[in-house]
Image (cartoon, rainbow, N blue to C red; front, side, top):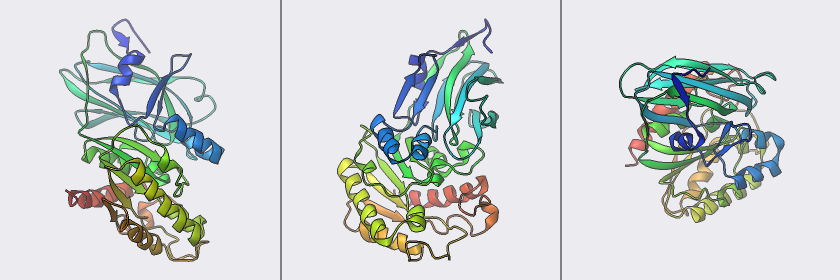
Length: 336
C-alpha cells in the first residue's frame, strides 16, 4: 500500500496518537498491538477462561486521533478473534465527519495476512480519528500519511474507566463509534479505557488491579449476567466486594453504577430467583456505604422493543445504542 509520496509512522509516533489503551506493544513482525487491559488484568482473565482471555484482546474503545495536513491516509491492519462475533469495522473520521471504513468478516486468511485501504482526507489542517473495532483484536500493520505532513497529538479533558459486560464491550453495534461507551467518552471528552468483557459479571478481584492512572469517573455496568447465571447469595457478595475494592483502589474517583437495560427475557425465571429489578435495588443499597458513588437506573434507556436489539433480544444494535447514550448523557449532565 505504501508509495514514495507517503511515510509509515513508527512505533513511537503511534504511541503518542493512541487513546483507550493501558499499554502498546510492538511485535517482532513490526505489528503494533493495542491493549485496553494491563498485563495483570489479562492474566486474571486467562485464569478465568479461554473465552474471557480472548475477549480481553479486542480493541473496544481504542482510537488513533490527531491533527494533520496530510491529504491522504493509508491504514493496514491484521485481525484476530476478540469476541463471539465475526464482523468488524474501523471507522475513519475527518473533523467529526465519517468518510469511510475498513471492515470485513473475520476468517482464517485475515488472521494471517494484513489488509488495508487508502483514504482521501482533503486539504488543510484537519482532525482525524480512526475508531478501532470492538468485536476483534486489530493489530496495526501500518499507518501512512503524506511524506511531509504535520502530525499533532490530541489531549483529552478527563480520564474514565468503563467496566462492564458485552454491552460495554460493544455487542452488537456495526459501527464502533455507536457503542454507548464510545459515545459517552466522546461527550465527556475523556481518555476512556473500556474494560467490557462479553459474559462478565461482578468480579471483585478485577477491582483490585490498578490501571496506574487516576480516573475522574468510573462507570460500572454489570448485573445482567449475574441475574441470568448466578445465585442471589453469590451476586450480593461479589457485587458488594467489587464496589468496596474499587473504592479502595481508586479513592478519589466518582463511581457511576449503570444498572441493566431492558432485555426481552426480563420476565423469565432465572437461576438467581428474583426479578431483574432486584439487581438495581441491591446496587442502590450498596451505594449507601460507598463514598461518592451514584446509581443510574438504565432499565428504560433503550426502548422495550426487539427492533432496537439483536435477534437475541439482549444486545442493542446501533439504533438501540443511540437511545442508550442519549438518555445516559442526560443523566450524566445532571451530575455536574
